[in-house]
Amino acid sequence: MERDYSESVIRDFIFQILFDRIGKMGTMRGEAKVASFKVKGSFGGGICSVEGALDYTLPTGSKHSHKNDILIETASGKYIVLEVKFLSSVTDQFKARSFDMLNLKHNFGKQIVGIMVYLDVPRAGISAERARAICYPFDHFFGLEAQDSQHLLDLVNPGNLEKWEPLLKAVEAELTGPS
Image (cartoon, rainbow, N blue to C red; front, top):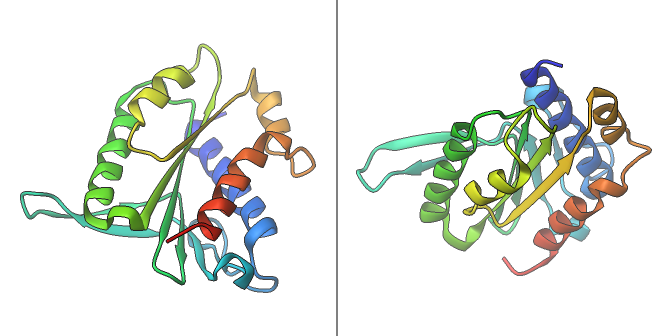
């Protein structure tokens, strides 16, 4: 599978399972890169969107914007950022996201929570351990291993959510925990 296609499939799958768990019924809008939904009031309310952007300023004064794979903005002003990586064979992709997370945290402080999701395929990318080490600015790191393309399809099957439960519980905890 081509990496960009796979990452969008995985991102869209995560977005859908988030909607199923925390989304307010009837609020799903758009699709793919412009999809969004409202977060249930029982989780504090807010908006979850695909490719939601957050702006930050570097210490030099230079302003930048980062498009997050999935962004949850709570009604209380907290941001939960999910980044999705798949088949990443170079460390630069993780370093770039870690750089943005460091700067987002510098600008937003405790208002931002970073979650990295990495689907690792052995011999096709860097190891989950190496990715976790590089992604130290993220608050949560979820590494799943897919042995091959078929196993990947099994992982993104809505009837097979047990591997995704820790991620869903982490998002729920961040939504219901202190802002």
